[in-house]
Image 1: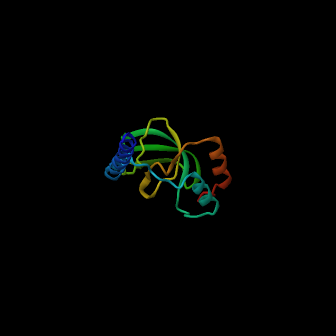
Image 2: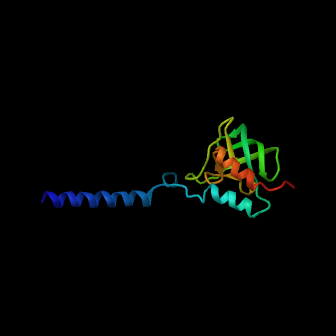
Image 3: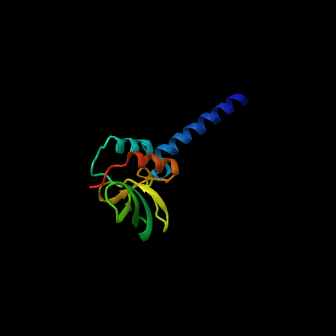
Length: 136
């Protein structure tokens, strides 16, 4: 009987976990991204000529979900200051901190999320530089 009860508890725990995941708000679910490699390969293939990809630094926080970002190095697109906004999706939303440096690939309207903001590791920057598109 003890073995049967342990089995029942395991089944109940599994069912409770499934119920929790099904009813969980988006903020508890992971954000799925294609990854930084896809960004580099799209630059190499010269896809989406209007897309911007740049290393930027947050220079001013406009709200918890909006910031002004200075382009430090452009891999595709133009330089200057960019106004970026975090997507509304709570599972993929990003926050902004003054001075933070990231590689950004914002969507139309300056929207960014976890999939379009990457850490600027030396290896990643080297790959982006090798795939860089000429400016307009």
